[in-house]
View 1 (cartoon, helix red, strand yellow):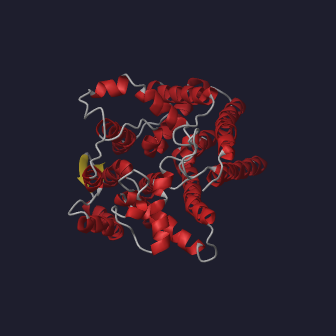
View 2 (cartoon, rainbow, N blue to C red):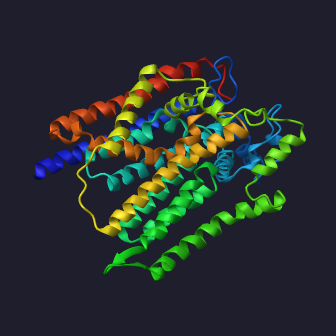
View 3 (cartoon, helix red, strand yellow):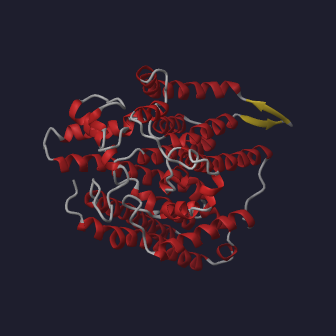
Length: 459
């Protein structure tokens, strides 16, 4: 028995080393080689990074936060800036760049400093996903499948390699989910409340698309204190207030400055997006959209390849949505996703019969997770129809963790998996993990890196 545990521990350490090494190798390869500006004809630069990078560069140069009206943030004919958006990711990058600037004036070193902030954020997320997997799955093989699916989905890793708020947004969803899962296990200890509060703060100050997770976290946190005792439903107001008030106060203290600042700068527009659109229109720029042309939403969704483009770019779309992976990579993920979701919905697992309170909480958890996956999609469809057509999977990646959880649960419930021996399961898992790792390596080193190396310069 001890020998088996030692062997299991040795393989666990080896997989953990491979997990982090693969992330750092692939992420650093992309971050250090992709160009910043438009590089025709391949456009292998990250989407909008040349415009986004102006925000942390402004912070680095001036030591203060910009408004959305700063001319330094304009990019060519683009008459709006990312200064209108939430600034925390850019603040972190800008002040790290400011520190690096104490030792070197190299523009390339400053760009790398900004990008490596997101690489580090992605590494933190990889750690949280690993910890989350240990909480969500009893089967160690499925746990590792979940970790690989979240961290090594080519598009997911790509978001941690250039200047954007998406990287911090993904980290915030991992923090919130980990805080909730731990909280349901330990009655929302200080540690669990801290993770939950940190996730809400980072989400509120990074990316609006993931705000559904904040609402979902509030619902699940509040629901924890409702339970059935002696045949009657009772709400534990004492503990709800005891644990909820400190979280609320901490969140308000950390995020209110951003919304107050927007309220003052943009005449009451606490989000800043309405001001941004009005600013664009003040230059006589009108966005031509399906909505402005009077075309129905159904035409955009079903006659333009919207969902296929969205699905493919959710898996892998590097550069300015211009560098795609091999066709085999997309088919591998399509089959795996389809099989996992189908199995999750239609096959019965080995779940134990639970108490009524636990069943109710479980159902609510699944409803909230579905909501958190759908909210980014709904916001994207609205944005694409009324503001700017962009069927890009990076906009729905905030839902990647719950989606991969359901894919993993589907594999766990799949009859072939359930009825197989331990040895067969290990072989199947090894095949799937190898396929995920190979898909990432093909995307990075075969499909993207050659174009990066052809670019005349990085900066």
